[in-house]
Image 1 (spheres, rainbow, N blue to C red):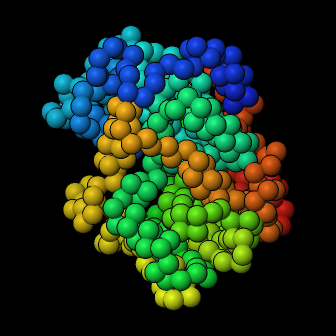
Image 2: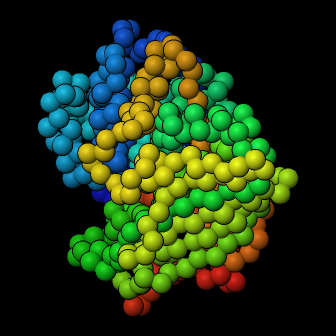
Length: 439
């Protein structure tokens, strides 16, 4: 992730040039079943030290077999130090943490230093807008990867993912993505039954990610921050960093629909806007989306994604076929229930832990795990939906993936301007269907 206090300068285009320059010998790095340290200890680099990142790091350190957190990197030094202190309070994983000051990297180039370190696997939990370039760098360096969803926010980012995935497969790298339902027992069983014909041919799908969320009028920029720092610290509110909540959050349900269909859609149309997310501090994302995806053969996927208070809260994944209907999961965790909880009682397995268990087992030479292909397609499917809602147009898959609309700024450096600038009233430009260029 970039950091406003670093003098280093880079862009996504620069990132790709850098990764292309890495030698093949260095890129081969560590093969599955062997470890750089010459023993069984898997060394971990944690890049992007926010709340979900700390959760992923905890889960990685809670797997079976020797492993150790040896490197951390983040945009902001205060967030890195706060995350490290929080991890060290966990007695179960504290013995597995060894991150002295010289292996704590801060700045725009912090991710590069972490990836180039003596580690075996990198955890990429930075804002999604940075994901494609950082994933490409990790693959070029021959590192195994866990990366959070979504994996891209635009067409150029998707194309970077596709290219990196091909290289990762050539190097036999293990890659797991935080679309955790793919590692969740009830989903795996339910979708297997659908694929085995339990409801016949799928006619249409309904998914919902309607969650409560209020405004952020209290999140205006504090004195002393740069505009770029503000946007990175409040990345969910900005499309270039998060992709909008239909990409950052509803990608879970969009991924399930693609999984049910064993395909990505061929086109999409939709509508959305801002009704309750108004006023300064609310960035530029919508608070509601409705998308109709069309698959080859005519099947439709109707996807709702909403972040508003006081309205119907619902999360579920539903398939309608020629022989019946299947609801694979409900609730934010897909195992029933209504809201999120830090003390969730798992009816099925805990998929957040399972995905890291699967990754570490794969690195150690067990069943090979590679989530990169479907994760890229599902992320891009969500981006396609946002393109449709922002523009008000019918957009094809090919138009979306070949789009030259690159949301990444040309320059990410200390003092560089943010790619989105506030208007005179302190608010930010918001997409206007019919006027906004979305691809």
